Length: 196
Image (spheres, rainbow, N blue to C red):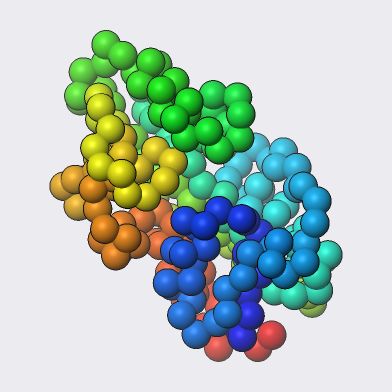
């Protein structure tokens, strides 16, 4: 694929996707000319990813890639889950989302703060074909943020694989173990040799 339109305007996500699909031109849906909002009303990460990818693909007639991902905390029965970006009400208010997460986990012992990030990616093609893949990365939620790298819940997420928070990890370290990187790697395997 020469060009992939990503159904997102999130610069962090775009950077991560471009790192994995190095041979293709990766552009945001806005840069590609998509206007309007997409209602993410799916009950799962996969449903939301497909909703976004299909909407952009159909509107632009180009291959479209979407990711839906979030943080799932065991002690909160999987919350914030599909509501991760709007956990505190407003969409993408990282500070408010992190504050609410810490409030909801207050009093929980370290061993009760286990969590994982999950990502589902969907690629929709103009001919109607679609492909999905998912990935997870496991860790725990810290009591206080560590580091300023990444975005979203990264400073609160202590990665089991890295032995440090995503907020401290470099982009390269995070991309090596992240949920999105695992999902994108699985997707790239599925579509190897795909003619578009």
